[in-house]
Amino acid sequence: KKIDYVLFDPNNEVMKSVLFEKSFDMLQSQAMKATNMLDRYDALEAMRDIDVKKKRDFLIQQFDKEKWGAVKNEIVNQLLRDKNPKSYDLIRKAIAGKDALVQKNIIQSTTAVPGELLPDYEKLLHGASYEIIALSLEKLCHGNPSKAQQYLDATRNIEGTVGRNVKIKWLEIASAYERKYIEQLTSYASISYEFKTRVNAFAALKKLNYLDMEVVKSILSSVLSPNGRLARPAGEALQYFYEQEKFKKIIDDEVNSKTWEGWQKERIANYLK
Image 1 (spheres, helix red, strand yellow):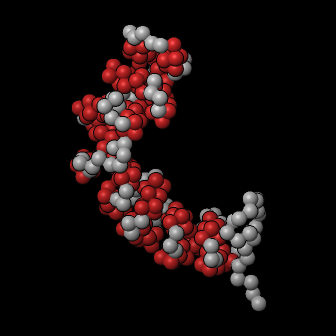
Image 2 (image 1 turned 180 degrees about the vertical axis):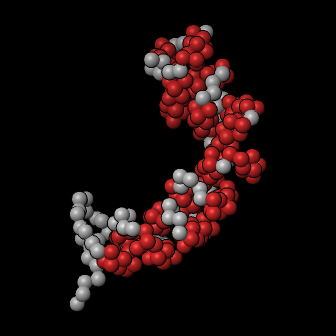
Image 3 (image 1 turned 60 degrees about the vertical axis):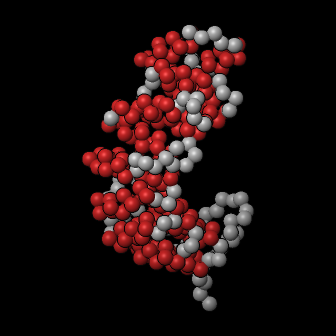
């Protein structure tokens, strides 16, 4: 009988390095018929270097049959830059499918949104998770600055998950257009908020390369926090700003204006080198 496909170590249960070249027909059979998700994924992964014209119809067919997000994502990634209308239709279907893993993969893997798919990508501003909304807001505003205000208006009242990820991303983007939003962003870096919000605010301020005395105070108080998940990102922010000549004086002035305990002085000094 003719061999349909061959598996070495089904379900990838052994640590190994394998060179096992298979024909496109054998890979198709494995992707369609293998019982284990990892074996189907391996078959699709092995198709990455195959010309998209040869595999397009098969991948589209498999997307409709597959249940696992990782496998669907592999299919999407191989068709994401294909400008064929069939591939565009698949991306539309994936976005409309409300599978959070697939939606997140699409927005993360897209470098430039095709004009034909822009209305579909804009739907991700109301995606299946706050992380998708924040990612979509950033990518759409960056790629379509003329529509940035429209995207900001659509997400203005969304706070996001713990850490206010959407709100802080909103303020970061809005501040690039109107500096009045900086004040609210800097307030989120203060001791008034829990550590995840403060960490997100520090990251946004670094992207904007914005520092004032209130931010310096917020960073220094965070560096001294017993919570390492706050202290480390704050220290990285302190180091980032201190490496820039224009910010050294404001940091040095604040540090020198206080009397620190030995351990506090040492910890701060670690980031001022």
